[in-house]
Length: 424
Image 1 (cartoon, rainbow, N blue to C red):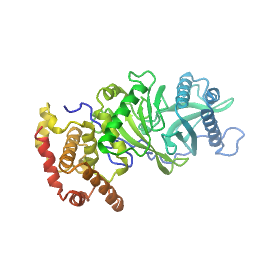
Image 2: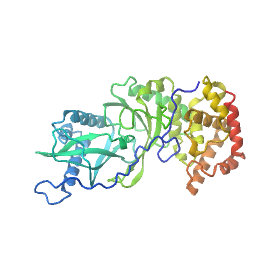
Image 3: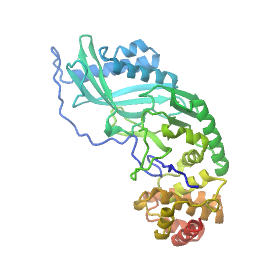
Image 4: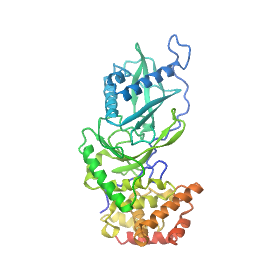
């Protein structure tokens, strides 16, 4: 039976369906500074320095576990903001926090409204947070903070999740969380979630053991499973509007002011909190995403039908397409009408349900006929050739790779996969 929720994959810098870059920085341009120096200050940039000092104080309070000191940086007249900031502080205290700091660019954007009004400043701010074991380096996020000048100095007057940065990765900001796991595998859920962190951790460990057993490979880096309603959007969807139960992606670090990426921060499986119960009851989608995690080193030189095909194949094990059937007459019709070919990069995602099913068929045709080792050899060849030729998603090298590994043409693989599809 085909899953009702399609597993999508978001891998920034590696292969997969793109539903948005969690750290993509839109071109905001350089706005004119919209504030004036406070009375008595001659330096036009003094206000930015003052805000930097407030953020440095917040960072020291977070690292020192000083809640009172942290909340002293928040406008005491805004109780809603203080509750949200208190939740962020408490969340970071239950996480293995090892580093946090902020970068403040001397550029002001339009300030958000602050309760009670006042002289406000919204600089470009980048937050850097590192968790022990989970992150190789701090993960960097643009944050939308407006500061306001009060009698006691500058304080945070507003913080919101900007739609431009809706996919940013900040599971510690928002509702309160609970955690379970260790440095190799850390799980987060909402504090009052129906499926808690311990239960999801157990299911994830079981699913990961299944995946590594099939692939005979161990993951190269720790994993964070985020099932909170914080950070990356609660609803995870692709261009066709179909919800997914989970996605996987990579987080990155940047320079202090966010101008340059500094490398991979960590690996994440983001579980849609609305469907965590389904992930626990039937871990096919979880195994799909964990396959991407284990095989993440093969990079984005692989075509989507290759990476999604192996994830579907492993996720559905020990079942095969021969064990499946289609109840949807519309899907059967679309299979009959589809052109018999491997899915080119520019067409992936046009019909997600059929694309994933086709990818699974191509993978099953190759693995059942030639073995898993040859499939992984193909993925590695795509990686190596793609890197040397600056190729993304196998563009222009599919025929060459298939001939070298299998002595097959692309149309032969396509026909083999479609024979499996039309037998459903």
